[in-house]
Length: 475
Image 1: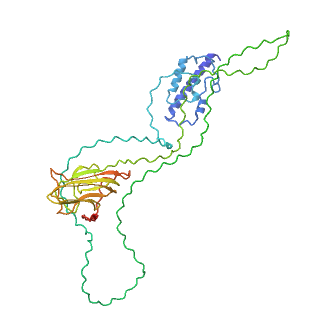
Image 2: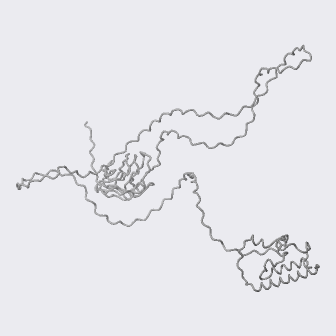
Image 3: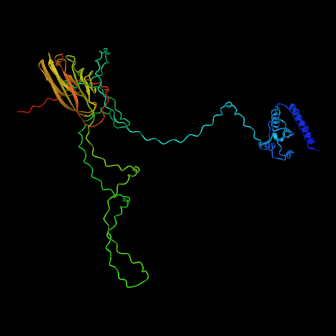
């Protein structure tokens, strides 16, 4: 057979293959099941152009045409096969359409696809380790003391209070004198015999009322400083210092005497012994200071030192007041209220009751200067219902004054009181003042001062009190 007959036979076979593929494409459904073969098995179905195990060698050798067709016609045929709705089976596709070594032209990059749905949220991770506790911050400096505020305006007079409840029963009076003996009464009938109780143990009585606290003793002298401790052990030797700078070379020695040689053409003698060591040369000039080394690590905390001698007590405690009278002839048997406050920064004095309360144990100074007019005046300074000093001014126009130092305990109360309505000549006007003053002279300790709130006073009657008359020595 010649070449023309072979080509005509191949063209007929190609037409049959195309017709069969078209007919099979029309008969198959539009959907196909998923190919269960692996990518490796699919790759085996598409051999390369040099693979001769499936189709055998090309009958036309290395000719670039097939059946008289150019390479462009072959590519058009391949594109037509690939554009079919149902691709033809692999065994019906020409080998040049499935050549793995054929490199086609790179197409235009497609548009970016739509963004996919967000994935499922991941599971929460493990909790991290707790960090180290940070160092405490530095304590700030104490702020500057603020300025004193403006003194407020005097408030309006409040409404009259309700009448207080009836006071409690007063203390039992002193025992009266023994009365006259009465007539003897008629002897009564004999009583029944007494019965002994089950136990003859006496029952204890009720506990007595606790007494007032005693006065605080004076502050002791500061203790003597302790002896100096023993000297500590010697510390470890420090590290060896750096090597010193080498000294300058010594002076050259004098040349020795020339030796005598009586030999001719003798052999070279051996090396002589080394000479004695020369004198040490003069020390050279010190070199320049080296570069400063890096700062060493921070050393450990040293041992606690000895406790020093206690310093003097300098408490920041103040207490002072001064008030004047704004009424005439105040009521007796109760503290006199000096309602016009001249100074009461710490508010330890209550102008509504006229009572001053000691904020801390210490020594206090009190004084009063009272104007007397129209009546005799008998007045006294009281501490916790006990009169301390008394003053009597018999003239109907004069001044009664007194000054005293007292040692008070915390919460002790001090006030001024007149004796009765007859000897009540205390007076005040725009031209004459009556004042009551007190202040803390020196505290006993550095304890904190109490608050400005006044504790509730005990319900107790105010009396003038009794004091023994001073004794006058006999002439």
